[in-house]
Length: 326
Picture 1: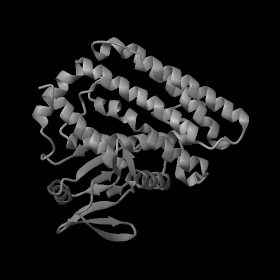
Picture 2 (picture 1 turned 30 degrees about the vertical axis):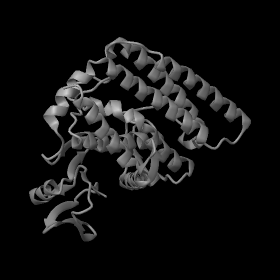
Picture 3 (picture 1 turned 180 degrees about the vertical axis):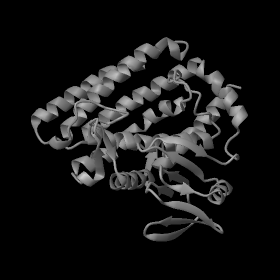
Picture 4 (picture 1 turned 90 degrees about the horizontal axis):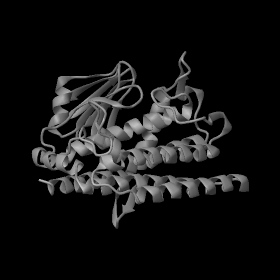
């Protein structure tokens, strides 16, 4: 369970071995046991005693911006065999194995995009033809990615970056066919979103970034040492690599909300520059939908776990891979 404080004036304190949430409607006591993370947005407060209780129970504390992206975090010092794993992690990034690893991730990302397009309900033959063309084009780029060769990631990075970008354009253009007319968008927009669907996607990806970064840290991996994304200063670039495997889960959650047409004007606001931002109600609905979806049990490689635990298994396996490079 996650504790999420995103209402202005809300505060979190300690009550023996539990947290006490104080908000405009009163107080709520929540036992520390069973809480995985605490997410705090601007305008909310947490006491030092509450932070210490979180550390004692290995609960990560995240401070989030309005788009759902973590600005900082506090975590337990018990996480991971950090020095051993990180030494291997650095060696891995310059190995030929890293080339195969990132090719697999990008190819799987494109495969996931194809799968989501094919599972969407098609209303007419014209739309179906457009979807089939998009899936075929995505298959072409997936095959190109699979056939890339290189000794280190920088050998393939320009081609990989270009083909991944074109694939995403094809995918989102096709996905837009299923969106009700009032929510359709011209292209993906980030920082800020220029339409309500991209506002939901950006916030959902922010939630997923936070989740993956926390699981990498818990596994003892340095999220700031990337494989493919290695150019940004002071960014958790390994998260940007790993998230490509799981973006599709956010896409599915957002598309479910959009196609069911449950979104109202109360979910978002529009600023003077034309940018769209989720408001409290929109964030709460998306967070609840996101958490419910991630708690569902699925089977991957013969192992049945919740979606979140599937990511945990992936990070643990990645940590073991890094150890081999010491």
